[in-house]
Amino acid sequence: MEKREELYAGKAKSVFKTDDPDYMVLEFRNDTSAFDGKKVEQLDRKGMVNNKFNAFIMQKLADAGIPTHFEKLLSDNECLVKRLDMMPVECVVRNVSAGSLCRRLGVEEGQELNPPTFELFLKDDSLGDPMVNESLVETFGWAQPADLQRSKELTYQVNDVLKKLFDDAGMMLVDYKLEFGLFNGEVLLGDEFSPDGCRLWDKKTRKKMDKDRFRQGLGDVIEAYEEVGARLGIDFDA
Ligand code: UDP
Image (tube, rainbow, N blue to C red):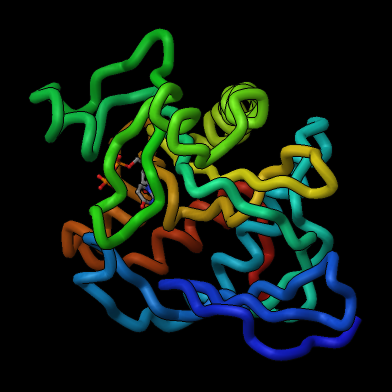
């Protein structure tokens, strides 16, 4: 497969065409952003770490029967994926209260959420990714109801797989965001799964090991990502 021209550049990844219209190359960059792109920094090694982290997680999800766009790693910073027609909604599941849930509802951080919550946000930085619901998604045609239902089902299945994976490695999967798209009519998990798009706490100390370290200026951002990877058995030097 040959890498061709850039299709678009997101905040942390760039997307390239290939000579096959069904496939694209994702390039993970070192750019790190928060607050809808208002805080941006370059963090050494981040592109490589997130690319390999994502490959590891996508493989685990595929092994568990969850359909994803991921095909294979191409280099330290690149992977090959199927080209999806993305739905512009973010699916968020929370096992523990944190982040915007606490700000919005005045809930204290760190409470177990049972059953886990499911939220939808519209992907639109200019609007600050507003929270939406299934009715709004249907009325405005952001996704077909059946495709949204399937995305929701897959988002919960991901929780079953990853909660255990992180728990076994001494971490709590607090929350995470997923994005889905269509490939020949089938809903597949797209985008990425990395510590940029989830919250992970050490089970014992509750130390934050995800992008909150960047958002909150706690330091040692990539060191924490690499520690998460090491606990999962990911070899970033491979
Ligand atoms: N998240 C994300 N991209 C976004 C918004 C949220 O990856 O544009 C992730 C975030 O890292 C967290 C989860 O989704 O793991 C829930 O985020 P939340 O709604 O608490 O918003 P935040 O506090 O990050 O603004």
